[in-house]
Length: 392
Image (cartoon, rainbow, N blue to C red; front, side):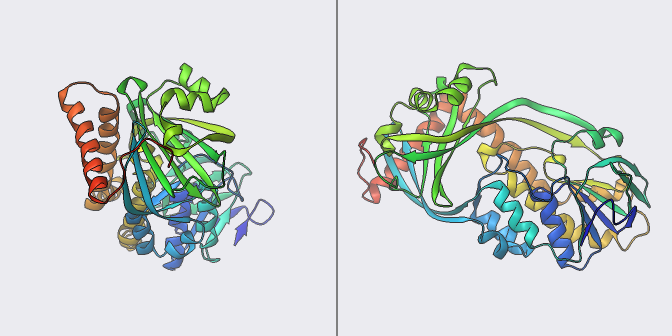
């Protein structure tokens, strides 16, 4: 059910979801399937192409299954059964590690297609928000008003409404990591010989976390994570001469995967780590990146957002709708939810650990890097994988 300025100037609902990315769209689908009266508000009827998360692991797919969304999402993904581990140009290990490649736009489209028709949709922006413990009033840019009992803020990095609500944001690590994404093409054949590859950095001074290439919709997608500034030479070179820049970062990469070229645009996205302090906000709950961000290199971002949605929509909102008021104190129970807390803690710890093992010197961190190398080398040797530096 789609509303626009020509159809309605006042819309009533129990729950309004602001933001139609992965968290907002998943919340709309889960609430709609449970029979709740809700509305999804997002500027884009067709979600635009965006460089964000591009892989799901098995636990994240299990979370989607628990939410009743796995079947729809699976159709939009490329299943991957194994990952090859490489460092210093050597193939160390082949790991049975089922995961799934996708484009963010395709993922959002799949989730939105699974939203029941009973869920109201408005493709517009929220201009203002007025909140109390009993009623929330949203005014859209075209003058349409939406009244509801609960507002779910799933609008990611957008700060405007957060500031209107007087909600503070704590910066934990500015420019924590740089995420780089591009399509990778084999030069001499139609395949690289692997489904997915993880390539660890050759030296700490490169400030690189890791490089990964994986199948996605009939081609290979590559993600590179590192701790560079936006204006550093490495980032500039990746955008203007990507093949040369990749060879400079990973001199042994071509020995590992064969000759390659970068196909199309190189996407660069700096990531800040921040935490939203919304404990004083009546009637409004924050989820996903609107609540706190994560490091995409640690692989926890989409999983953290899905845990937020699962716990909020499956456990807390049904209880909240039984009450006449929704105070900030009551909403605080969601932020203290044990499964959410564990997910948030794992996410932030993973971000700092990846930074440490990628960039820090000293015997402790060096030892961790060698342990990782020896583990995969020993396991690969046990499986009979030749320790080699020739092309895969």
